[in-house]
Image (cartoon, rainbow, N blue to C red; front, side):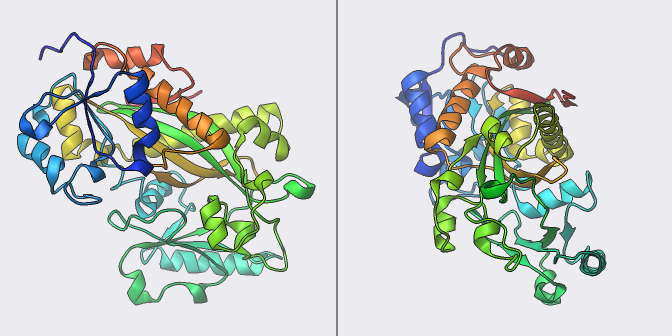
Length: 398
């Protein structure tokens, strides 16, 4: 199919401020996407941006049953044009972007990463009892509840437990929504920096068939309180979510620890060497790539993705991985966010805006549309700060 040979400008915003205020301004003010169109009236379009959840007639049209979502589905996703770009690529919600399915994917990589209830109940109880008998300190566990249509965010659906007595009853477990993970020990610094942390890394997917995915700069934040052996489940020493969650927990907010740091500064505070830092980044990229590849059968089979691949159109996703550095200086993934808050401030905001801008440049949103067969090479030639983790279904080993 012939592709248009003029720059793109026609856009439909599926607007919801937390998902898109900052990237919308970048696209409109810097990339020329300022000609708003009425697609249902028959207007041609170049870009639909803002997330499928906001493209319906109701708030959070997760099942794509109304509004523009319904209209495009009835038209047929395979009827899209090669110059058209849809945000986001689909299938994340049904795979690695909900905690339950991320657990299932991660167990293919590390069987001890998590325990799905009720299927892994016996194995979990055995591990809990072994840990209780071996450790001088109590082993803490993280109980999570999630599934594709639950849409839990900002630490909701997560609590810390010390024993099997705190597990949900068998009837509640039968829903299949619960999983348990060991609370892993973090790499910590000394003195005032002896505290848990959370790392964040942006991930983009620029094609599902074949898979192309990239990662962007790591940032890190620290828990509000140091670990207290006398109160090991003190939420202020364990929970590392944003300031809103910490305030809800009653934690004292200290900008020294609640701010987000560059990975160089974070590495200095947890006292790792340059070699350890580089090895950790490589291991993180490989782990993320493996998770994405594990999900490929489900992702590629999504109706929207199949239509985009057939038509020669394009999609992209902008995700965020929340993870940690273990005592062994290895990555440990907590969750993958399908729609990370798009309007961050401070250092994290600077990183986020740069990541968006360089993503839009990498996929050629400022160029005449690129045919599908040439997009991979174009992206690799315009990486900016993005690092390839999977290119054309191949895991990158560096």
